[in-house]
Length: 357
Image (cartoon, rainbow, N blue to C red; front, side):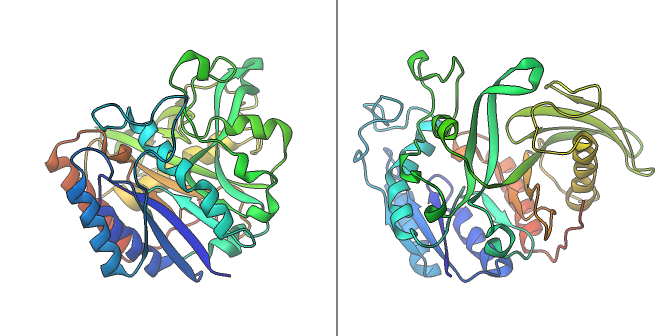
């Protein structure tokens, strides 16, 4: 089976070549990369041409998204009168809404991946072999804790990375990707990002999902010799911080801005083991040792995330690094962007092997 991977290209055409190179280097599946050219805002003509040219050079298929065939996102026109997306969520939702049913139709008897343009493979992997026994492989998200943190008002999936088997998922075409924009588009009183409306589907349907976890190290500081304070986020659901004594391997002062039970379990991760906070802390320390510590040059804030399978029986080490570019809307200085891109390139193209956590 050929695996089709779809990605959106817009404000950072420079990601496209590295993403393709990472797939060629590490992906063991027979694959096709399809690039959705979303450079349609005012002043984007040159980027649009650059993306088209890169697709031809790399020999990948390009889909030109065009403007306004989707009349609304969250009940509003996707762009303002000045031909600019209303915000980064609209910029992400609009092309996904445009391409969603097409991806399903092209892969009705197979599988497809939709993933962010700033995600790059960092180890050998057969996506179909690792996750083929499920219906999907997705990153769970929630909003609005309730019952002391044991449940949430809204459950959905991040669209940042997803593997889908259309024949196994009923009514997949009905999934809606509109974010919240006003109170009338909230779900159970909660603001949701792109993907939040999948909550309604999950209330009526079941899904055998290989849960993926995205662990982000946002920044760190050395507070003593070889003692680091590390801060980050997990799945976009909650923030954490901890102190890591690198020489001894000791980890302490772990804090998460979500409830933790007396047994030590994070209430909001019911599908995981009781010792998950300990697993998460060891994972963060391992990521820091393997990818960050000892480098001569690294960006600050680091703001890099790593994608792991939570329940794979093959390999639970990270297989993707996520640049976390914010769809190109963050407005970082050019020096920071160049430093961060160089850091990621060395990570992706270097001879790295990732240990199990």
